Structure formats: C-alpha cells, structure tokens
Length: 302
Figure 1 (cartoon, rainbow, N blue to C red):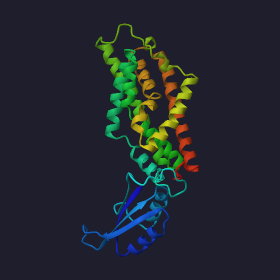
Figure 2 (cartoon, helix red, strand yellow):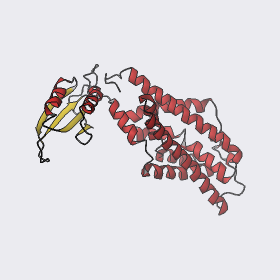
Figure 3 (cartoon, rainbow, N blue to C red):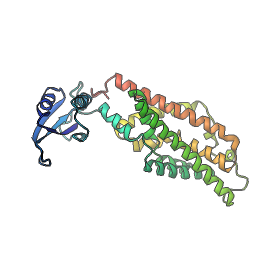
Figure 4 (cartoon, rainbow, N blue to C red):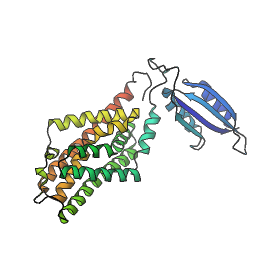
C-alpha cells in the first residue's frame, strides 16, 4: 500500500479534493490544516493502491503541483492482507512510478557505488590470483552492479533514453574500475615480488572465466530475469550475489590478465564480460516489458 501526503493552498484545494475522491484506488482521504505554514495550506493524507499510483502522479503533475508539495511513500500492510485478490483492488504489487524512481536513484555513480565496486575488485583479483572461489563469492556479495543493470533495463522499457544511458554509463564505469583496480593490484604485487614467480592467469583454476560457452549464455540470461524480479521486490541485496557471477569475476580476471601476466587471455575475458552484460540487460528488459503488458498475479500492473 502507498500513502500520499500533500500540502496545497486554498486555490488548488477543491480541485485536488475532487481528484482524490473520484480516482479509483484512492481510499481513506483525510485533510487538515498545515500548521507548519504561515499561509493557509491544507494537508491531504490518503491511502493509494499501487495500481492507481501512476495515474495519481500524472494528475498531480498536470495540476502543476511541485515535487516539494507532495510525497508518495510505501507502507507495510499488516491486516487485512488481500494478497490473493485479482483486479485493481489488490493492495500488493509495485507501481511503475516506484520502479522508475528506484531506477533513477540507482543510475548515478554515487560514492558508495564507487567504493563498493573497488572493494569487490580487490577481493575478486586476489581470488583469481590465489585460485580461491570463496574470495570470488565474497566479491560478488560486495558488488553493487545489479542496481545500474536494472536501472538500464527500466530506462529502455520506459523509453527514457537519458536514464538508460546514465545507468549504462554507471555500469560501464564500474566494470572499468574493476578491471583497472585488478590490473593495478596485480602489477603492484608483481613489482614487489609478492606475485608467485612465473604467474600466468591461465594457470589459475578459475581460467574458465575467460572462456565463452553455452553455460555462460544460459547463466547470464537467467540472471537477467532474476535481477529484474529482485529489483522490483526489494530483494536486490540477496540476489545481487547471483547476478554478479556474470560480471565481477570476468572483469577481475581481465584486470589480472593485464597487470599480472597472461595478456593473451584478456580478449577471452572481455568477450565473456560483454556477452554477459548484453544478456543481463536483454533478459532483464524483456522481463520488465512482459510485466508491463501483462498484470502480475495480484492484479497491480508494474
């Protein structure tokens, strides 16, 4: 369930009250004076079903109400739970405006994203060097690359070119940082003599990261579906580990090949990474597109 809070002046109050009263999916409308303003303002509070959120936001924007005058938030419903109803009256589900908002927030290369992607690069590079699958899994758990991947899919399906390009640029920046960090770390270890003598990345037990086969394609395609579903459900943190199996290991392998020895393997790792990213975005976008065309089982269209 979503909850609307809006503060309006006397001029727009009647029209807004009519909007909330007539819009199907808006319930329990309450209004009271806004004591925080010197001018006469009225605060509206209403419960909004996810299926009505997009239409409500469009109507609010068409009335010229600024982004500082209203907020739409999600609240957890304890009772009654109408999870098995069909049609627009279902209270669960995710509003499209919610998906786009989350994508917009995750399309920027924020400081936390940069920090986590570099941490993941260090862990993954060491995993490749010492042939440790545990370290690779740890790097996948840290990596935040799921978020810009899903934001790119949302931008493509929504027809928001700038959002898609910005998110893809953030994802590309992240992958470049993984490669660069892994290459620099490997080179430093080599210069200081900490890298095993005669190290060649193809001798690592993880050399399959640079080889493309049918399993690579199937895993990446399935991961794209899981990525989008987890992004919508708020389970991105848990599923992100599975998604990063298609990006972080190959990026780190490529970086180690460049900086630590085994440059011949770099092209293979780059091909794996490119195919994986392309499939993630393709299947993620298709998953979202299907959900936009067909309502989900709760009846609330995404």
